[in-house]
Amino acid sequence: MRTCTALIKRNTKLFFKDKGMFFTSLITPAILLVLYATFLGKVYRNSFTSALPDVLKISDKLIDGCVGGQLISSILAVSCVTVAFCSNMLMVQDKANGCIKDFRTAPVKSSTLAMSYYFASLLSTLIICLTAAGICLAYLSVVGWYLTITDIALLLSDILLLVLFGTALSSIIHFFLSSQGQISAVGTIVSSGYGFICGAYMPISQFSEGLQKVISFLPGTYGTSLVRNHALRGVFAEMEKQGIPPAVVTEMQNSIDCNLYFGGSKVELSTMYIIIGGTAAVLIAIYILMNKLKSK
Image (cartoon, rainbow, N blue to C red; front, side):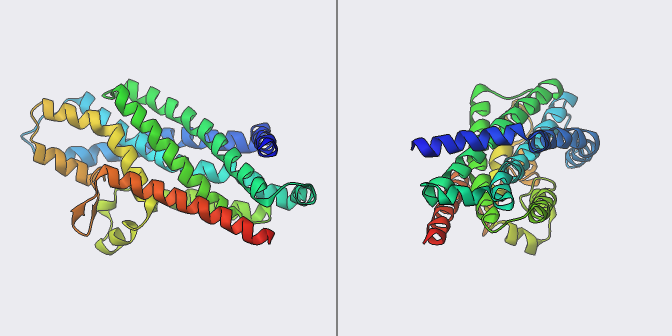
């Protein structure tokens, strides 16, 4: 246990000491927020207002709160996974520069070494994503705040769950990498593609029916929906208070993936937790098994 703790401290310090990796990971959510607010914000707003019946009148602040909640949920859902791939690069760098050979010649178990990389990456990713969450909440307080303390607590729990999932996924993929070029290639693919397949950049409801069915099997989709539900719960509650019919509110939730359906049945929030939590547990078990088999 003491050896694992020392290795976790070592890996975490090296990550934050490497200004390139740290600032790249931290700047990514901030850049996404600027880009979303500048370009996608107007698209989301127009899409939202165009879906409303002409007889309904909603205040600009409520609309901005809805758009802002959609923006920050997209950013946080993507960052929890993409940042994990950045913070987990140290495992591959140790292979590339030969440090891993020194650890393996020392009296350190392979499982201890593997879990030290996982927990160090988990800790680093959590620090960055919680910082990003603070920035996003500050942005939301400016454009339209409808969150409660419970909403914030649930939002933070979603971030923790997605970071567990993202770190486990990145650990498995990085297990097979051994060079800087491979790191760059995987990082580019994940950064550019994950946001689309998890429904963060574009609502799943806007995809073709066949693609919707494929995406409904991906656990990241349900992680995005969890974050979106808790970021927008207060907005939809306020809409109902202002007299907007529940059917209209439900249709809005469907259009931005707060409500997901599998086989024609609505997926409940508790089921989403089970899917993303169970997937994270399975991935962690696979990662541990892979390292044990390699050591043998």
